[in-house]
Length: 310
Image: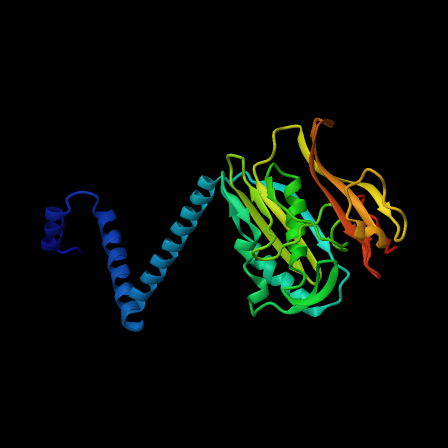
């Protein structure tokens, strides 16, 4: 039987819903007891440490969100591959592999801002005086010699060809004087620090990002940015103008060095072709280059076919 004094006490302080209040008080009491018991079992500072971990995770999440917002502001949220080229060499030189990797890593992630000029030499640096680079074959002045940083021009050539598919302005580019096996005649780009550079000007209103990766003797360069207007397409074109056999008379009407008479060489003209919905609208002249064919070298013709040396 319920004590009359107890009944009057609860009726006085809990006049309504007495049957609900009792279970609620019991649950709250059990929760508080469990929390206190848990704090007794856990080492000092554990709860505080867990709180710090939670705070760090929240901060990382906020940083990621801020980074995403930054990417949106830089204009890469709708970026696509607008130009790409893969340059493959048949060289077996191991030092070249490391040089390609270093140059591609230096190039990878570079952003060309609107209205800015990109300089390959400024980004990659003076490889001839960089001890990280190894000695490897390098084509220079109609000769193949071993120099520190040999092979880096394969990376610049891949970038040059990728750029020709975009609206980047070619401010500076130099051809090899002899043939190379990783780029078609007329579409290569040699770099020599403080002497010959590859410079690209971003005339668009959006930034362009360079992605570069190497694997063995293969380099792939991709350019990410805003796509061209719908229906627009740009393609590089190289045309064989003249092939000269060693000892044959030099062709008339061509401005050639007389010393070439004893050499086999190619004369190539390169262009940028602009298309709109499949129809060519413009052909922009890029350069006219002469390549001497060295004994034992391979030749990549403008159409992509590789011929044996003449």
